[in-house]
Image (cartoon, rainbow, N blue to C red; front, side):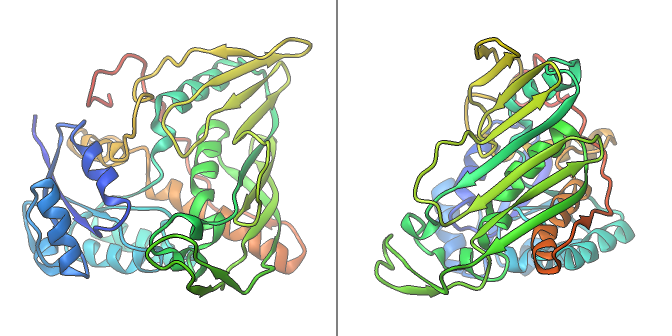
Length: 365
């Protein structure tokens, strides 16, 4: 196999998941790690047996084709633009940018340079979500009418070792967890046409209860409870709520409602999970997952799909256009809340191509 050289910038909390999952995909050749904190890169490099270099050295390495950007959200575009200037394809952690305006600069720069942009989340490529996509496409729920999408928790300061960025610009429940839910909904239903939203922030400070910063207080600069409605181009209407302010709830992550049946879609933060379907008047029944990549954490599958796409010339699935659309939708909740009106969504990405059934380990075509 003609492997694709990978360099990772950002060696924080999420990087081990990428590094472990990359071993599933033979096409990925991880050649170097870098971080603004050299000690973080050296520690992660020693852990995984990968050379630690400076960011400048990584970007200058001709053997690296794709830069995987695992930095904090507020520098996603800055790091992405540096990779594009170096002639590298870029795959970013979510969100693509803090604002749609800055993300648009990255998309435009990459198009001008002739390189690809990809972005997490790639969990919609997991077997459970691909099976749900097939069910919707096959008409198993009839014509989609509506649905719900909920992520509700008390806040990340309970568990994350350095949670301040979740409450700074680029954070909040919508930009943090919204990408999983809205990306999966676009995968299932197609693009969003308009958004109605309301937001609030009832606390200006939060107290960290995790270690090692237990007891420290952090400022809150973003909305921590976001709710509203998405109207899709198809006509389906989905209720959404994302919150860092909810002690407990009983909602499932995603439900879809169609003219013939309803569908429970598993948590889009994971690749697998139980699918359920119920027709009118019937009981909920479990649906077997048909597709591969439902039995673990595959947080490199989007990078691997981009690598295969580069080699074959096809579009990659976790694309910059998809991520930009999701960011535009997420940003629209706050804009709608501030203006007291619907916000029309201008971008219209194509639904990602579904994965085929029966893929072997490491394969995506």
